[in-house]
Image 1: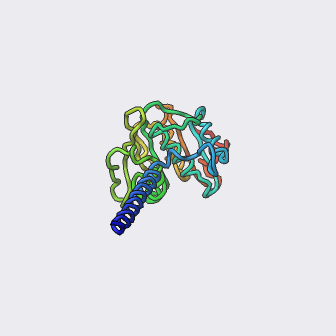
Image 2 (image 1 turned 90 degrees about the horizontal axis):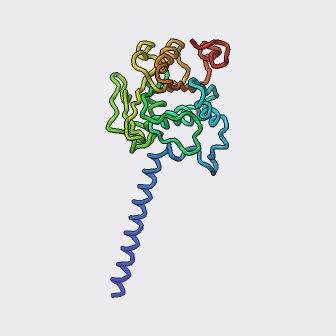
Image 3 (image 1 turned 120 degrees about the vertical axis):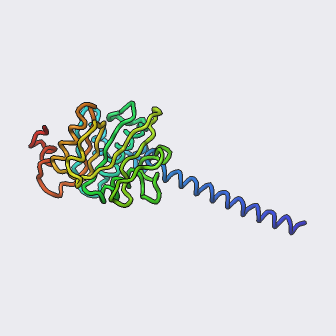
Length: 242
């Protein structure tokens, strides 16, 4: 009986360890799929008071329809600014501290990079996660409705994604790239556009037209690698936007 009791206790501990391992794995999985809800906390090493430029950018959205984070590489402008704000508007999951623009309804939004490949590898990955683990980006897995439609001719690239909004409706996110040319940015009105990397001036102007009837938002995040271009000078105040 003592031997049986010892074996039973060992099996019980083993089962408990397995259950704990399963629970920890599920906790890690859920954490990986809810990044949006944990950015810019009140306290800790990543508390938002350490990011005054990011906070100023968000705050400006309450009054400015056209904003740009013109900054160096690796300072969080794509993930922590453009991607973060885009995901908030698509889902409606604004944190309590958010003092920027708020939409009270689902939105139609574009997110674009300079080429089809960089849009897939950077912009799409930031919002959706890698292709093999969709739902680990800034848009929570639970808010992605169905399977994203694929873009023809580009392996692993998405075309459109439906995103669940807190109001009960669905936002529509479309992925584009500057190398498609201006004509691919014509068409329907949008509530917002996120351009990651500096766009050609004709693409920029076309996107601005898409926002006119919606009182929409333009978000640009880029490093001015090409120098004092027309788009860069607009944000520096030397050229007026039409």
